[in-house]
Image (tube, rainbow, N blue to C red; front, side, top):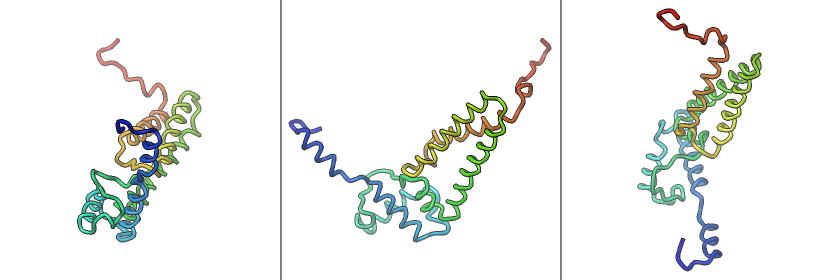
Length: 171
């Protein structure tokens, strides 16, 4: 905030402040088109963006990079960094997780277990929709949700008696 600035002046500055997302999307798409099969390498998006801007200037993507950047899209980032083959592998892993969780939920006989699985399933679907606009492959909460989903799946296939571990030494 600037001392003495009116609300209208502040709103005008915010209204014209460009979002970096379209530029990052364009940069990711350009990188994918240049190396469509294997991409530029996992984790190399910001390095490649820096390199290109150093060599070609701001005109390359229309964005001056002033800090670490990711493509702000899981799917575009996977395409740029891992190419079509890597992106398909990521999509297969995510799709297999969703399919397996849905299959396990449908087979549940315990309403309590089904409720927990539905909650984790809903989180996973929400993350996958959110992945259009954020890079989830670098977001720890996504991986935590996926791990919780896997754990819930493993636990839901066991009987309650299998989960009780007897104490050693008698009692």
